[in-house]
Length: 122
View 1 (cartoon, rainbow, N blue to C red):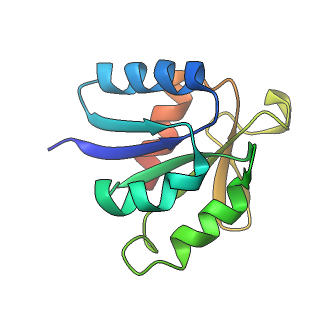
View 2: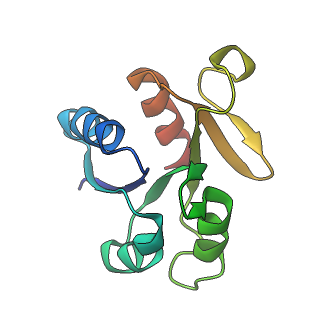
């Protein structure tokens, strides 16, 4: 059975590319959204196994979106991996570093590093 991944990033080009790459592995069903304001409701309906969440988005901070997931009984245990362009690749371990209890990956993310990080959380 395919694992469900919710991808939340305000850049459609990034979400489209990541969705295609993840789905091409045959292991995942990916739903990508570009509006953080609908992330919580979308996640409630989609019921993801993991969320990939951009940190900096217009109108919503990734940390605020993550907090809304953590405060929701249906989503509180769903792992969240932050994606960010605010750190350099050389400042982050290839398969992620952590902020608090969340892993984060520097964009752009290599597919093999993303898959390794996803496997660690699933």
